[in-house]
Amino acid sequence: MEGPLQADKKQDTFITVSRDELLAGASKLSFDLFSVDLDKEDLEPRLLCRRGTSAAAVADILKERVFAKLLIRKEALQSFYDHMEGALSAIIDNPRLPTAKKSNLIYTCATKVMQDIYNDPRSGDNLARSRQMSDTIIKYTLSDPASIPSLLSLSSHDYYTFTHCVNVAVFAVGLWQFIGLGSEEELREFALGCILHDVGKSAIADAILNKPGRLTAEEFATIKTHPGKGYALMAESLSPTALDIILHHHERYDGSGYPESLQGDGISDNAKVAIIADVYDALTTNRPYGEARDPFAALLLMKEKMVGHFEQKKFIAFIKFLSNTRNG
Ligand SMILES: [Fe+2]
Ligand SMILES: [Fe+2]
View 1 (cartoon, protein in one colour):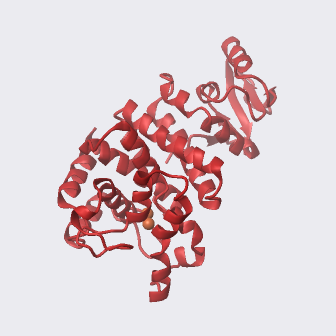
View 2: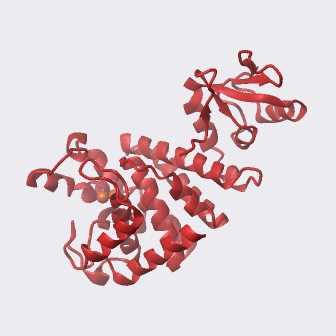
């Protein structure tokens, strides 16, 4: 996968950034910006703008001069992403940034937000960032039909709770829109529930979550507490629609799921969508106890070996949605 930023080959302490990314970001630079002049590409990068420089001043400089390269120090990468996270809405609206670039920025920022909220789920700031991120995913997927395949192409094939949550939100929001389940307000709450669906895992030891090989019955029982733990963590902060996804994403249509063994239409339409997205992403990524399957093998396994887990109508819609996005 091509990252949003490429390490500069000559100077591996620097990373190149694009003019459009810089201008799309927040109103002030939160890092030093360096440049290499045209025809002087063998020379060391020179400081062009100090952190704190206004975006308008940077824009003026970049209007007047063309550089061979614009760079930031590697240590400033996090500041650079913070700079972008505050401006994702403007980035989506920027017609000069290609879809692949927008997807990269959104996906990278989303994964970082997830990492932060799983590390500190009680932080109101992290919760506000999660909401902003799920709104961003909705805005982006509604604004550009190419956005969903583009975001999904970035999905890491390694399983981390953070990327898993972003992937599940993208699959679930895509399927939800494909089926057309309700109002935009409902979609916002649903998306937030999806991006936070495994937040209860923050209260479970990594040694159990990432254990290679089979879990003992006791360990599995501990894992099964994560929907209830997530619900309890977020009960005061989220709407019933978002909490429904956190609590019920491991229910199964035939009643064999957990924690409440809900059955059939006792599971909400929203949760039925999230359940499919969650299983599909888990099957198509590498996990401590199994290699990633390709999309066809994952769908076949869901169809043949997981009979009764999903509502068939939505599962068939999911297959159509996936084939549409891949051909789209
Ligand atoms: Fe889960
Ligand atoms: Fe999950």
